[in-house]
Image (cartoon, rainbow, N blue to C red; front, side):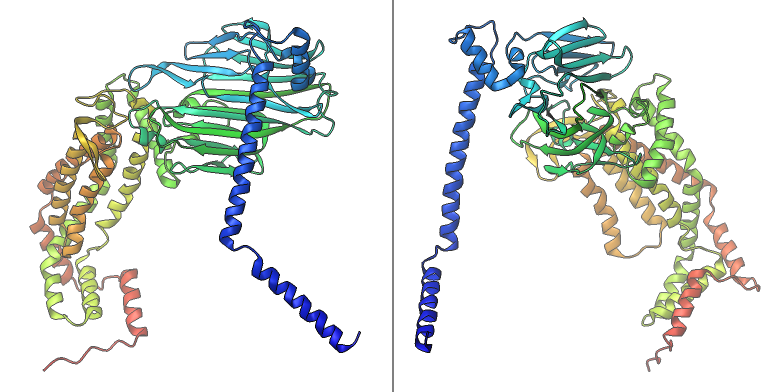
Length: 617
């Protein structure tokens, strides 16, 4: 080939490439085409699913209804659908009940699953039976690969083998006389725990040779049980505990829908609600669960839909056994803690770090001790407040005394401010020198207050999570676990709500008065800080208006006792005597030990080569 031929070929190639680029569809056209293909695929998939569903309805139906198919055609269709389990593809639904004083568990032979769970000692907020799990939409099924098809237990009718309606139910789905899936449910007489055992007998040549695991799907739409739907949604999610680390309990976000593939083994999975929970506990572990939460914001009857998919290993032995447990019951700290060394109580949000410690080792034991006297819970909260105030009395007294000292020194601090208007470093040095000579710690009023914060925050977590308050009335509050409404508004106020909580109003008013009293005792003169201190309680008014009435009641009582302590301290603390003591300390000739803050301040001044500014003429 000569040079002209090569150039011609190159030009032709460039023309082809250019034409291809020019004629290719734009991004918008490609997106529209893809959307069209997706729509066609979705329609085809929907039609396929519809046909499959119709086929299943025609094949797997109650034998009590008439069927247009003859027996041989019916058996052939069942054989195509369920393989060796075709004999279990039809039947009549039968229900079996396990019951003790705490819980009533209804089991259906259709799928061999738990169909209904009622907690007998609890009611919904409007007095109806509390149904923790309902048959209308809950799912629990095992899938196995067999004979080039996926067989799910929810399509099978199990036959009852032995039934003790108060203690044990045994159900079997037969592939043949010696090949079957066996479910055994047992209920303890005094607990909320249902033992669940799966026995696979003779299925080693039925299950596909390349199948190394069994898949499980668990889904539970959570019904509304409480008065405040939004608060219930913010407390409902999926919890789980990893194996190998007894402290490693985690959960999905409560504030938004989420899905998470854990890619490891977990010991238990819990569908946790605000005050109740459904937990599935493995004897060994569940493999690689996928957990998910979904919320239908338009629904007024359901809180969320919680689901989990996981697997168990299958070793193709003639007999395979799996043991699990269900816990259907309340989120009660002691009840959950007693169920083995599983840390189920970590579902209760008591706070992290020191706040959780305060609740576990101080608040809960004290609360349970007072509850043992069978008192009204309003009285229990009152006594709890008194005890906590007594425990904090030394810190409160120390804080008040330090504030009194700072108040006495306020005139002299004002003189230093006037003396050094343009030299803040020198003013700070002289102020710290004044504190040192007078024997006053400027942080003495802050540290006791900070030490009290863990208890205040712990209470913020304790009361909304305490099931003991659920349904308990006090004064005008019909239920201390939710808001106390004395007036339902015909409209909704942004950031406040559509009702008026009296305990919240009392708490806010008492907080403002308490803040005013403390402001009079401190030396703070910053107007912005002053207004911020008054603004915070008003901002929290909208938050606490939808919170537990027990929490607002506790904070109100705490403020009332705070007033009493302030007046009591004033009777025992003489500000004039404090002033005389400070003046005596200032006149003492012995050198006062510098505080670490004073030493750092002086060192910083030296490093910066501090020089006093020239005086103005």
